[in-house]
Length: 201
Image (cartoon, rainbow, N blue to C red; front, side, top):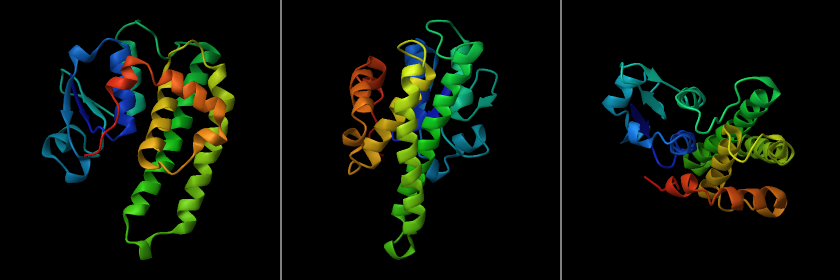
């Protein structure tokens, strides 16, 4: 398998952590790429030109990150990161959707701030920051309900929090959400989190 990714991408990081936790890293060739440069290999693999994208041995490419994570989770049971049935399955998938929604808002803020100051929309930034604040409140409520110490919901939430640190270091979310800060400090010690720490491109 071939994974197209970029280190700053929290969506890519989520996939890489899943591969690490499932002991699948040896089966995946990681291809570093910048999607903003429209690399030919990525465009051939994924018509959307987005990362992460996982190209399988048969040439089929899976995207985006929730689909890739579910595929990787199906390859073995060591451990199972998405419960197969029942309320726990929907709790985990909902937590992933919450974290990805937080990420969507944070990425849009980062993109907006790259525009010339005179072209930025303070209202758009404020709306997205409000989304992030509400998502953090929901994480505090939902994380304790997730099954076990490791699952896709917890991974996605950790990646979202790490992205806030990476792209919005001025946001003091730990002071506002100390319970979340304590959980994240513990979870971020996992080897999979340390091995995938983001870096600028």
